[in-house]
Amino acid sequence: MNLLDSIIILKRREVAQSKANISVRELELFPAFGRPTHSLRQALLAEGASGVIAEFKRKSPSKGIINDKALVTEVTRGYADAGASGLSVLTDEEFFFGTSDDLRQARATNTTMPILRKDFMIDEYQLWEAKAWGADVILLIAACLSHTEIDTLARRAHQLGLEVLLEVHDPAELERSLNPNVDMVGVNNRNLKNFTVSIETSLDLAEHIPDDFVKISESGLGEVDTIQRLRTAGYRGFLIGETFMKTDQPAQALAELVNQLREKHYV
Image (cartoon, rainbow, N blue to C red; front, side, top):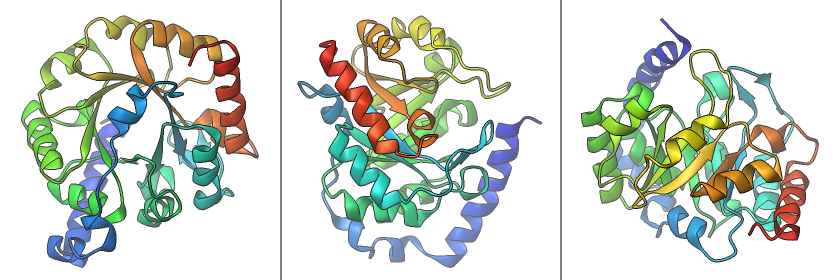
């Protein structure tokens, strides 16, 4: 059993407990549930957009503690001010030290910024949670979902007004997972089996992703020239967390990256 298998087993237990604690009907009464959502897809395609989806991330299974001192309100507000096109907030507690409060605080602080709920989504109930907590986008990881599960979750997400980011790691996952209810395709450059990172993963898959889907590269990003290589290959989104969060001032790190992109006329 690999780490991803272990994560999903625990996630199923967590979801069952959450269902017992708060019903779908109660989630629908949360103030954020009825608000209009914001399109990450449109934000990434907007003229002059940096394309950076800046992530608030305290910990990861591969790196351990990255930054457990930062405040989600300060960091996400700083990200927005520094030129992020969207935000990503981890809500998995066991492996990433994320919480639902992180997402809710990020939403309260950034009322018009598209926000991705970053978690292991395996059950429709989690879509109601995402909407109730203030997310605009949900992540579906092909490595832990079947084609039918992806289709069902994506369809339901759209019914709730949420956009869908599908994450893949190789051509096989991409081929079996694409469907019309996916808005964006993210290529994770990190191998979830051994945690090695290679930007070539995104470059190799770029031409296999139909242009109907906005392409997003994930993991191992931070260099201006790397982002430009990916942009040339057709990517419009760049999910970056650790590069920023490992510094004392994550928002300043993003601002410096965006300034470099603009100085080189990459955006």
